Length: 249
Ligand code: FES
Ligand code: FES
Image 1: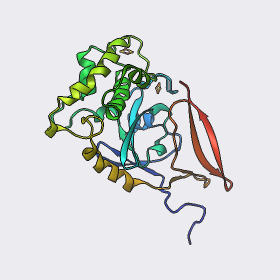
Image 2 (image 1 turned 120 degrees about the vertical axis):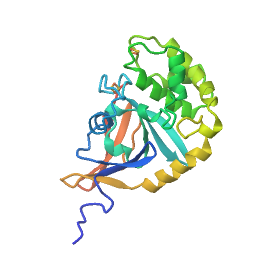
Image 3 (image 1 turned 90 degrees about the vertical axis):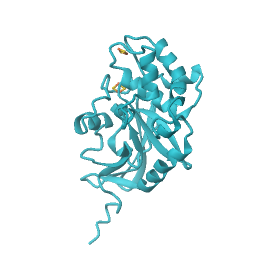
Image 4 (image 1 turned 30 degrees about the vertical axis):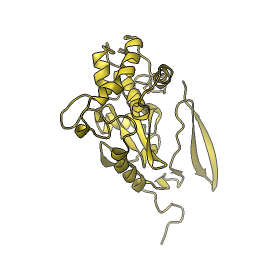
C-alpha cells in the first residue's frame, strides 16, 4: 500500500557535490547545521566556529548553484545554514581550494599569504572563502565590491587593509596558473567550459522534496536568502506557510 502522506521523492538524504563527488548526507535533524556536519561528521575542521549565530563569518563556506545554465557562487555562513538546504548544490570548503595534485595554494590563499593578511589566523578561512566566492564571480572587482564581499567577515587582530589588498591581487595570481593546470576551483571567473560539467551534475541532482519528519511534515527544497532574512517554506496541516527566520548583519 502506498503511503500518500509522504511525497514519493522524500529520502531524508541531502545529496550535494563536494570536491567533485556526489555526497549523500543522512538528515537526522532538519536543524543540523552545515558547520556541525562539516566539523563533527566529516572532520573538516578548517571551517571555524566563532559566534555560531551568523555574525562573524569565521564559518564561511561557498555554495554553487546552477542558474540559467551557468554557475552562481555565493558565500554563506555554515553556522546558520541547515544541511537539507545543500540538496542539489555544490559545496566548497577551505579544504576544497588546495590543488589536489600539486598541493599548491589557491590564488586567494597565495595572495593572502603574500600580503601577510593573517595574524592569529582564526578568521582567515572565512575571509578566504568569501574572497573565493568573489574570485569565481567577478574577474575585476572594484574596492566597493570587495568591501561588500567582506562585509560579513570580522577580523580582530590583522586589520582589513592587507586583506583588501590581497583581494585586489588574487585575480592576477590566478591568471598566472598555466591553462593546462586550470580546474573549476582555480580558474578565474567565467570559465564556462570547466563549469559546464558541474552544471550538468547539479541539474541531475535536482529534486522537489527531500525530507520527511516522523510527524509527516516535510520540507521542500529550501530557499535560503543570505544574511538578514531567509524564508523557509514548510507545509503544516495541508496549507503552505512562509516562516520568517531572522539572521543578523
Ligand atoms: S560562526 Fe560566526 S558567522 Fe558562523
Ligand atoms: S587574523 Fe586573528 S582574527 Fe583575523
